[in-house]
Length: 140
Image (cartoon, rainbow, N blue to C red; front, side, top):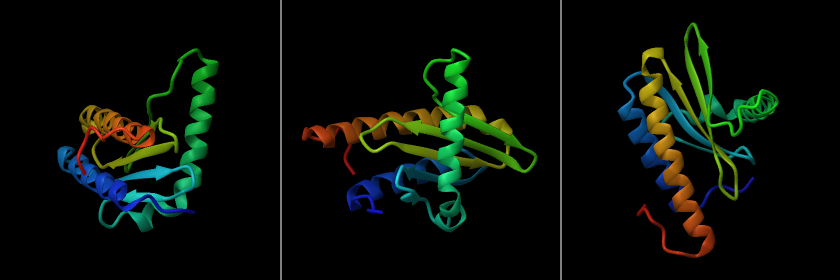
């Protein structure tokens, strides 16, 4: 498993910290890649690392179900439990990733989704620019 380049990890860490600060009940936030590499804000890596494969399987199942139901492109998956809410947001880049956010309060879901959609757009813009050799739209 190859780690993300340092500049990308720093970008993810800053954006994840901003996301957590913008959602009052956020307990954990991370970006997970297909090869199970995890970029997370402080203290989250140990909690989420063992679950990265299950998260990917969950999103794949959701995509298959959404497609069968005619829902087109899957933008996020929300699991609402009695102890919190887990939101998974796929990001389409050359190396597919998931933004993972764990909330304590379900009333923060809308705010969290807005932040996650912005973060996904930032990742896609930055990594697409890096992959094409063009200057990145966002400074790390």
